[in-house]
Length: 410
Image (cartoon, rainbow, N blue to C red; front, side, top):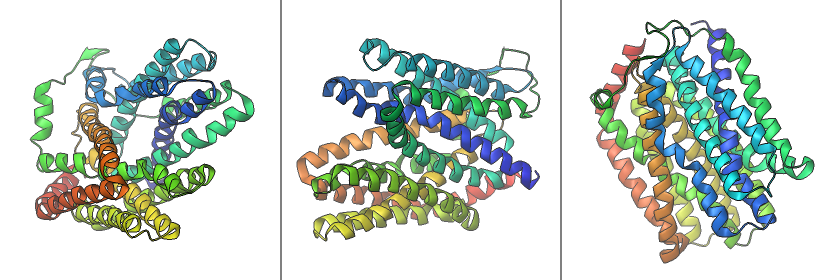
């Protein structure tokens, strides 16, 4: 693949991941502020978060994408159709207003969550199909950076847009972003499928069993489940921690929201380069150790009451750990997606990733209530130490498996 063509694909898939992430982030993390301003109760805002539930069921949404194929551009057709439906739905949501019937608004947001989650599957399956192994590691870093930038825009910039130009403006901007991706996607050459239009072509439960039969797949699944949620939980509770330490809310939003997002995006891109340099097998224990170091730094800053400067320094370490681990995870999800089963394997891995990412923060919140920030962070550090131990004891087996997958993909 020519270098220029590879970069065009990377930019396209990076943009698609960005514009698909922003609606969900805005609806789940941005809108609660607007809802509170318009009198929504805490319970109503909490229940509205169920609009993000479809992300858990990516493995189910992947089935029709993998099963029903089109002669020209299988994944491309699915991606275009779902992105167009999402764009139309965002326009519809923008027509309602915050004072619309709340159940109806929730239904629209839930449907938008389904479509954004669903569209993510063919987009990344297409990236796995078109990008060679050498480019998939870079794609993981770019995707991670796109999600961090999506957090900045969805939970920050669009709130400013809404405050300045009204309810419809953010939805129109998100729609425009999706439509801008459709034109290059339409011209993309995916190649031909041997299946006829809408012909069933798997997968079944046996295909998922085949995923786990890949060399190193079971070890990788443990890494997938455990590598991110502990640093992710610490980051989730960083904003309440800074508030409780006396920092003003606007400063928290600026430092932890925008600043942390920028650091995470840069760490994602750098992390992808490190993975390409060291190789995935050696990068896994290194990145797990870096995540442990970040958690220990945060725990020490809280336990020793070292002051705001040390706490912010630990927060920067935590943001770099999140970015680098995210880049690693997204890259290796591509590695372990088999040829002709990209959508099914990616959907299965994405569901597993989301499950622990949702469950661990719940447990961390319970620890926070019982043991305070120090108890919570110490527990997360112990859990990350176990992850490091797993990564170190299995590093040789993982290195061999990764080398085999790289050679298979070249």
